[in-house]
Length: 298
Ligand code: ZN
Image 1 (spheres, rainbow, N blue to C red):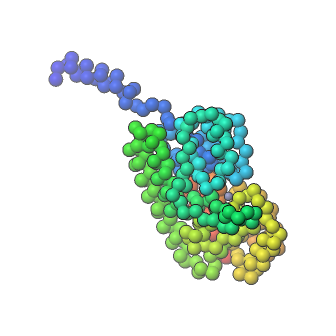
Image 2 (tube, helix red, strand yellow):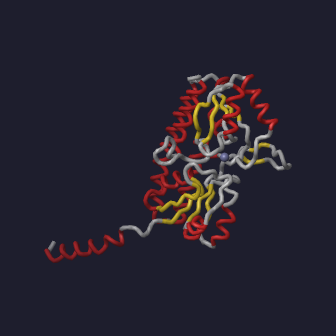
Image 3 (spheres, rainbow, N blue to C red):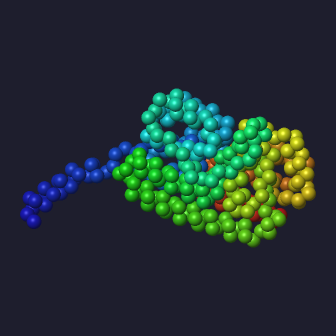
């Protein structure tokens, strides 16, 4: 190869570098912290994720801010969990005037429902992410939506999703192994609101809560009374508050039953980055470690 030709090829190569490096990151909005973490894992540095309800926030009763409307208006893609969790999101998307597509991460989940206390239609449990098998479904939906919005990144999203799914499967196996050593009769916990239905179904844990699927509703005296009765009768030892719920009712139940609080579970939001549940997977590690210790009476 002549010196001129190689110099020319080097020059050509340098010219190509900027076009080979990719365009600006995809602008993505995620409704709440747990979903935001999943989207970051699949999107990597091809996406710029804005999370609306941050660590410790209560998505059930969240009130969107003008800054949220701006983020939604600018977004190429908006992720919600669905199943009625973010009731405020539809209106926010509509009024923001943005053109970003809304993708529902829980699509394909087999929903849990319970009879409504107010009307004939059953209420759907939105906390599907608390079963790691559903988490895999979330990841598949996130990958599909990102690849549709940014086809050039499809291979990267597929590789990220595959690697993340392997971690979710490993955590799922770890959770099952941790509970396997606990007799079925001891696998009972009490927590603020009914956020662990999918978790209980997946891992064989009975979950008792004074408040239903949404933190919006209030505990009825009847429900609290029968819960206290059940805790005493069945000798339940694992009593938890939640990171994003008012702890007072649980503290009162603890006093009336003589059961000590076993710590805080992360149900609907992650902890801040320096906390014990800063990611979706660390949330399971934290919750299951606390639950198992409490069930053992440690
Ligand atoms: Zn909840």
